[in-house]
Length: 159
Image (tube, rainbow, N blue to C red; front, side, top):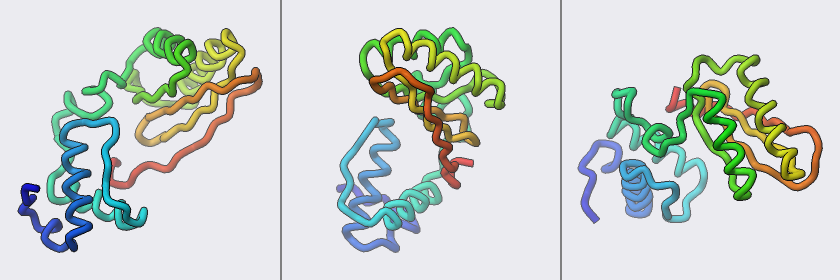
């Protein structure tokens, strides 16, 4: 394993350094998931922030995770089309809204799309919203009913 050679990395024990390296590589390679050593949630959170301090998130607005993964959308039509696909395939819909500010009105319009498309397949939408980062995660479950919304706190390092 190549050494990161950074200030915070050097402060960690061997197991934490392994986690640091795994997280850093996973983020740099924009991997959807990656394995890390079994550490406490607090340790992993601290290590993530150390990585951010050692290797800041790119300042170029044209390059970030959701955009690189083609999960940053700007139109309601794009959201509708992707929602149809997710419902049809039984997949979780995860995306970043970039079509202007995520206001209550915009959120209501998005919820309406999720609800309409879910009903086509006798499903309902369970929506998690990270309001400050405009990131939404939608799961489609069996049974018609009102969608359920869960508000998530922003990751302090992403603000």
